[in-house]
Image (cartoon, rainbow, N blue to C red; front, top):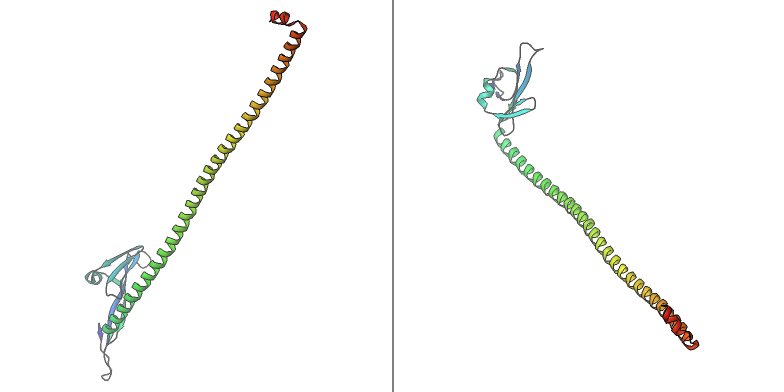
Length: 186
């Protein structure tokens, strides 16, 4: 929309439509409000509560607007827009790349730390179980061997003592002539 200045020495000013507010309902007190907004990249979007969708310019002009919002157009708007758009695009790309790199690094570090911690716990648990089993088996084997040796020595000693005592008694009886009597009693 172009507005002519009444003073012939001044230039006329151009405005462009950047947003409209729409009311649907029977009165101002009853109904629903939503809006259409033009972005820096010259695309129109319909904002209706939590729903946002892109629309074409023809749809905007078909709306029954409640309020219209205009922006003054500068003479060098196209050049400024291109620079602003290029700079914004470059900055957004750089920021997104940096943020993604940072987030990936953080996530990888966190995941590696978690995985290493889990793996260390698992390995330590497995190693402790293995070592405990090995030590218990070794200790049990050693204890069983020692106990068997001790028991065998004790039993052999007891049996040898008993056999020696019996043999001594038999010898004494044999010397005294009572051997035949003892053998017959058996």
